[in-house]
Length: 221
Image (cartoon, rainbow, N blue to C red; front, side):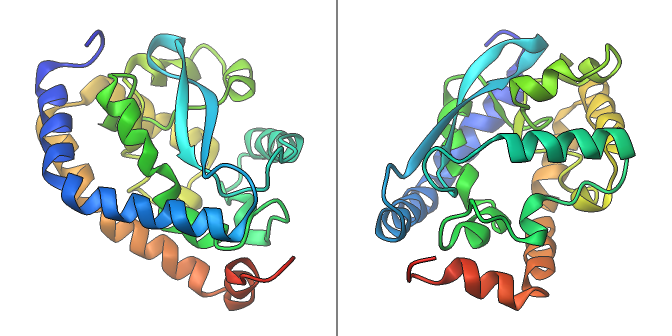
């Protein structure tokens, strides 16, 4: 695949094949949960920016109500860039757009599992910078766009390096570092650190029991 080194493509496909017996039942379970707690499709498609600024359709499990207003996130993103404060997600303060269980699925990263199909199609890799949406890309400076010299990934150096405790510029620096120094050993280390990072992020959400209970409730909001 253009832009994906042979070693990276081999690692991606090998790990997906090995993990498929575990991933497919989990994905089926997530699909059933979403269909039970929220009207509308379980899958969500969104245009994202990938390698060298190319657009592609990113697949995710839907964790927000259908036709959720994206202007809320656009304003949040602008504040993060302008203030350069730690990149706390809207979820951390409670997001009314989330469906029941949405917060839990997002904290565990289960909403991103369908992106393995993007990996199989060569649009993403298991490891790489987070693919951004077009309105984020439009606000990037030429220096910021060096992060697109690597194929986007499900996990990455930023995700295992503090993520929500880092600023926007620190995220950019980590992504650029990865794009310029990517190698097999670095990918393996990042993959190995991903599960502990997810557990740590889940504990952060666990410190907000009211938010979890509110988003885990199967009743009407």
